[in-house]
Image (cartoon, rainbow, N blue to C red; front, top):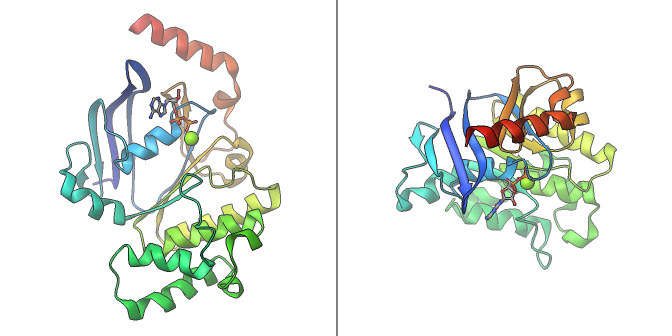
Length: 246
Ligand SMILES: Nc1ncnc2c1ncn2[C@@H]1O[C@H](COP(=O)(O)OP(=O)(O)O)[C@@H](O)[C@H]1O
Ligand SMILES: [Mg+2]
């Protein structure tokens, strides 16, 4: 069974369709980009996986469990299996890098003696072991992004979900971060990256799902260049077809 399954998922906010009849499957260990312009529905799709939002219709299965009908008391355990990198959940400015990661681990209820080795291990993975005492304001944008990744990895998730992880990064830092995500994936973790940065997709040559105005217009195995996402006529076509169908 695939690790993430969307089966005819539609999401509306008030009466507006934000995701329109989306179906796909992601296998354990895949690296998948979700690309599309701002407002295309990328974050909403990720939020549905995390059950931060409720589906309007359709089924979502993650790690063998139905997320759309999941009982409230099972949601925390579901979320603990996901590592999330998102600018919505930034670092605590009045806490050191070490504390920021420690607090994330504590929230999962891990025993105290495992915390220090885990923090240092994930900081080592992102090349920042030497910065564990630093405060967020003392870090560059690229370093902050890597701490966010380390924090997401510290809970040993089965799926890493990164929503625009390279937003606000210079090209070199963005590239470094993508290399780290690739390494994480190489070790077996499923990685989902939402991005409007098409050039990254071009470089990475990974599976790429393209959202245009809430419609999944392409799902390519090894995307080298996504013409549909760059084509404004594609967006107009989707919007026009959508109006006709509704
Ligand atoms: N909580 C919400 N309430 C109402 N509309 C929302 C909400 N979240 C997102 N939207 C709308 O859904 C659409 C898709 O948003 P989003 O998933 O954030 O797109 P993306 O991440 O691709 O930029 C946008 O039109 C946005 O305004
Ligand atoms: Mg978004």
